[in-house]
Image (cartoon, rainbow, N blue to C red; front, side, top):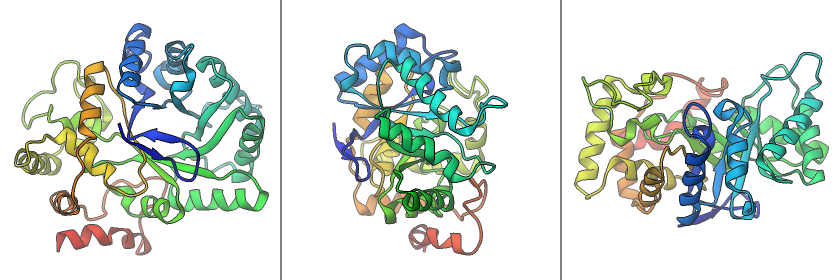
Length: 338
């Protein structure tokens, strides 16, 4: 297993991370969660990302039970959500209470990376940062990060933290894979420039990049697609199916598969220390760990970029993409197409 430093922190995370969204209803029960985490630790996986609301609120509890007596073996990242703040409760109190709840569920005295799950445009950055700074000072959170911010919001947040002498956000977590490259417009270049760790989620497009969804065929039983997953509905279209066919041919020439390519391509991107992926079984963890062993050459990365070229259109995140300035982030992609 390869380990990489997370930004300028003292956290060295495995390049394959565990996504905690599968722990708890309706996916994995407690016994399955233990088996999942046990196998991950055996294979050297030491980074797990979850959230207070995952698994209908049970994910952190299941993880805490699975890691009881061996907390030190896993670097834990979790998230709090602003959207579930109760009426009459201040932002400050909500964040402090959310952290205490997560600590209790995880059966630990500290969270290694504490992240805000979604941006909230109605709350000033300082109102979020002040209680987070208190949590770091108390030792309840070691480092801070965000999920689903645009580059401008992350920059404004860290500028506010610097003015106040508070801890900055050292990581950005966003949706990124070969077929969904919106972060290349601004947030990923921002992370590279300012030494912010970028943590991609949905690296397999909800399973689409495993090749399990075939054109004209119904989704296989038990898959996200069969369950009506929105991520599969967005990913499964004629454009992506055509690209997937080319990627499969690219991999076949090298004796590889697209799962391996999905991990290898992401890990070839500067600023990415770990790829977060939800796994429903120990076998899937084993496959992900094996996949991360493929180190792509610069030429292979360029070829994949050509096959999966994107014009910058489509869905945006947090208002961060769009406008003439944002197009500068596509320079590498455009060069690969020409």
